[in-house]
Length: 604
Image: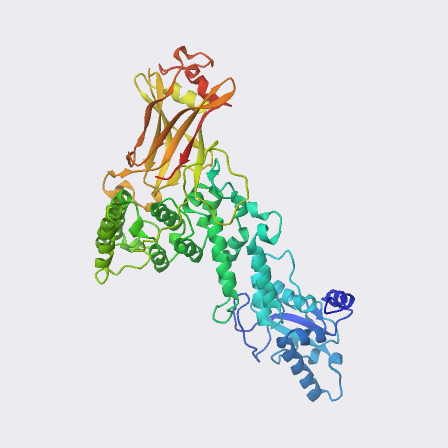
């Protein structure tokens, strides 16, 4: 049974802003001498009231007095002064000219548009006109006891702050409940459809296979909005109840981005990553449940963010983020190649530190040498690594996170069977399970034909395949990978290669390196190409890369004869030209105007 007569409650809610039922007016005015941020804390100054910021809001004094201590105090001042200045007059009969502000203003707002003549005036100081909607919403809550169902997270945070400023009973709690419901997501809150707006398939262009649920079940645009509004968050020292929201937000943020591989290889998630404030990126770097293939990709994710945001982020913030990378867990070959370069770049570019350019990563040559040794030891002897970490104490001033031996959640596993290109459509638990990631690639018939036409006698045609997810490469194990088709003029087969490159995000171009980088990389992957016969697709070639394969950084590795070509070029009428063979020789690989295949990332 409701605690209040529903008819009376409905009538009371309808009284909000109703001039016919009002017995006072509220005027929002600019606070004098205070360029306040939206919803910031203010004291009730006895100074002169500022200019009106909006039309007057008709109101009921008994609602304001009962729902808000701020308005209760303001009304008591009005009534006390009315008793002093107009003996025997009733509060509701005060003229606007004699009304007082909550702090004792002069009633200058009596000329405000929409001000009801003859009603007491309550002046509410605000920092700017942008605060008026949230202040009105806080007053409306006094009538209804509810927040608007379609309120955004930003609006709820603004309402939370204004409700606290105006001391509207229950408003802060209602806002926190509404934010909590939004963060709970559709699977628990029963809401419909905004969860898919996080964009794209979480498992790369071709989806994912293995365990876990579909990606849409974990996407939470509301948590992105919450972190986008981090400057509106209340001070935890004065709002301990908000701690539960931040705890839930951290878990939802990690769930939304899932893992470094998915984040870097899904265009929409990558865009969202780059838009995150530093505080949100810190959550991902710290979380053990945030997945990755290896720590190398965590470093690449950070470098990608710094490349985009370094120029607008101070050097101290960038350094704090860098100190969260678990350098002791980098792959030995990656650590040996990249850390010394970052240290040398730091020496060369100290003046640019924090800018995202040369020298952005704070590491000394001594620290780089230590972590290279530490990572190499981890691959052969865990006790040796532990002994190295013990030796570093007292000698190197290293953050605990850099030396952590606790890994992030592993996000890759071997496919469990079936078509690895098919995405899982089941709805699973919030905690993602390890999975393989599949990326479709293709070369259009036009690109192939142009390459053959331009092929010189005895020359080599190299075509970089287009990735269906729209990005220029696939991020994995700290590097960027692309698929290359290579054909030598006069050959009976074409080659298929996986190329490894040092990402530009590290800020280590050839000029900074002083020459070409000589290093080896590894990746767990299966590179496939499709073959079509009578409209039926077959995987004609699959090259698996594993722990025994070492790929030169800046070069490719694969099979020279992955795609046997038809003799005589039957099947497709085309002008081969240039002595490079005809398009017809490729006919069994072409379908729908393109040659297709996929790259499946696997654990190494």
